[in-house]
Image (cartoon, rainbow, N blue to C red; front, side, top):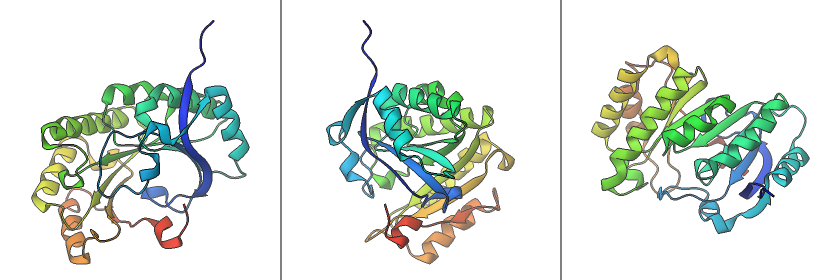
Length: 241
């Protein structure tokens, strides 16, 4: 008898989307536990370990999703932690949600293009997040590999004609030259018409960049993409999850 696939979930809840191009929309968040990355500005440290979550059979997780769905939910957001660590579980949950006609949204570091490609057919909205090296996401030895996977995930999302946007978190430590090189690499790969947004998100707290700093990053993107936006985290302002 085949053992049912399991998933470790940190929490499931409905709230207001606080980031990106869909901020302000009613969203069901499915937060998967576990993340192997080390961003210093991480705002969900309680979901970093797989043991921080509760383990469910996929069928039980789907019932929990159904229980938490509310009227007029705009999208279901797979977040973390890092959803790609449990990509097979995401695939099964996304398949169910798509069968119900619900929009699926992936919020990931895009550390593995192979895992990303497996679930991409069942994802409607892709947020491709590029981590600058000051985030301390990985050590310098592995940063180049992460960046290449992020770029390949962007390419795959655009090729698959998904609703795709880019997000980059910047702090007062972020290097403008590095950001400029990243922006150039992105727009050598895709065209401005291929994405629905480019979000510069300031980090929160003691590492928060100045407005002057943010404008310099904005000015780097603008010649490539005029719809660039500086968007802080709305949920932090509202004081909600």
